[in-house]
Image (tube, rainbow, N blue to C red; front, side):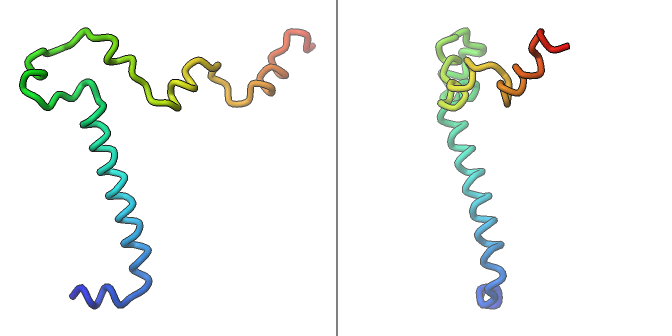
Length: 88
C-alpha cells in the first residue's frame, strides 16, 4: 500500500506540506510547555493557584519587545502628512 503512494511524485508536495504543518504544531506545543507562565506541569507549582509574580509575566519575545515602545502606525510619514493641522 505504501509503495503505491511513494511511486507518485505528485504526492511529495503533500507529504512536505503535512510535515511542515506537523512540525509547526509540535514547535508551538513545546514552546508553550517551556515558556508559558500559566502552564504548570509540576504538582508543587499547580498548588500555588494564581501567582502574583509580575516579573514572570514581564518576559517578552524579542519582536514584541521591539514593537511595544513604538507608535501603532504602519506608515508614520503618511499619517503625519494627512493629519497635520496646517492643512485646509
